[in-house]
Image (cartoon, rainbow, N blue to C red; front, side, top):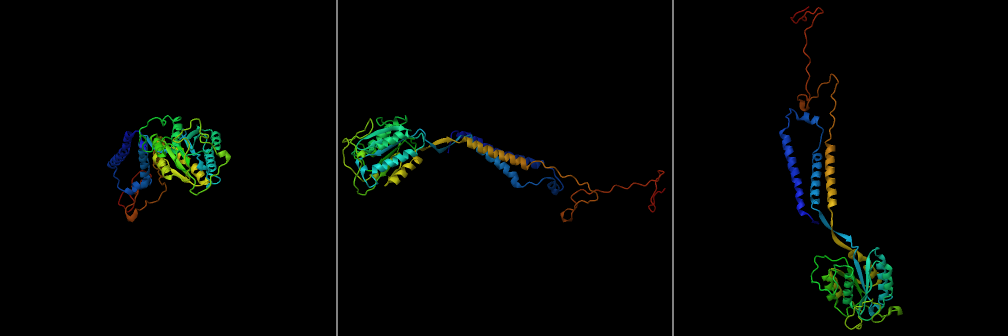
Length: 403
């Protein structure tokens, strides 16, 4: 968590000031206390209140002030938010080795199936672009939200000779640069190491391949270009090392240029080169680690589908600093309100019990046989008796006057 206005933490001084005020009022109250002859009389006259009822409202109020003071500094938290403006560039290998039948019915068919499920599973509004690469690399579909256009392009993929993983990465960077002004195209020089601390752009490249680079730019060199532009690259190695025949349907076999868009990117020998059935996991891992992505291995269609479907959890969401001042304000107001409410409820005035009017009752003796708690009433003094004529008289035997 970070603070936009750290100097506003000076508002936290309200907490020690509150404690000092409470100490001062308690000390002043003790000085002005009226001395009574019996503490039991005071306790009997006042309603009982436990210590925790006196302290809880104060501490709730104090915590509320601390939370409100922290909220005044405008705290920000790093949270995962949907990257609605992000583009996902799916770069698919269509080299001849994709005809290998170690994955039923062959690698290309399985990859097409997994890619279709990946596209169909995305939320509406997610922008996806499609790059195909063999000995050359080309953009088939610009980043778009039109799922049907992407599905049609995937169905029309055709194999060709060679594998240009590095060129596919560079082509994907240029496609991102056309929609994101923060990403420079590959023809523009960018200082190395300009990215820092995981501060990547939301646009992401996903490379799916079954072999190793045989044409054009080295994948690690292309990854350096992506890292300098803060673009993450996730790599997927597809297939097994089991020897198997290569069988593709007539509709899956194409020429050296196949359908690679209007601007195919050529490298080296113009589409020639040998075919490899082993995945260069070392290079794919290096590309992912260098760009802040991750490398995945999939040996069948189910694993590949799972990898692609799990990718949005990492690439569609990105971390951003979101201001959470309103939550601090609500929490602080809640603490203060509850503390004030409890204080008013527990210290509400309670009517004193009515005095007893019954006669003949004597005051209760105090515990231990001491003097009674209440004041003892003495009988009124006797008056001299008068006769009807108004003369004073003394009772017989008293030695006084008589009538």
